[in-house]
Length: 177
Image (cartoon, rainbow, N blue to C red):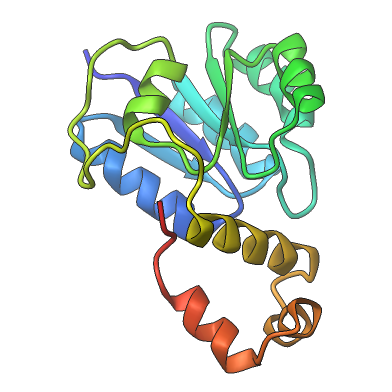
């Protein structure tokens, strides 16, 4: 029997990508981009697993954990974040999260975080565990500053001391590994 997975994240591009990847692997998925829709979708969809973003527009994913577990007590929640810290990892697990992963994570890393030992076929070749590339570090930094500026490209370019068009070109590219 295929697992039902609820994807909760305010990054619509990330949600679409993860949704498509999990669907290709035979998982039944549902998505939510905020706390209210996450709660409603969890009640209706009754997922086995959920991915939950730590930082969303209006709320912290940590605040959602108890409510989701109240609706679905056996729900395995994996907290996904681009802002990983030991403190938030400990807090997430204390609140009932099953695991905690730093973005970007591969599908195999996500399956292992859910406690699944089966390997899934990924569209990109798996990379050995290594330090992030310089390009990946730059991408992460740009995304962090962009988030801090509420998605405003001009303000982000000024904060990064970068020309706006250069920043737009960098953002149009896919995230490096």
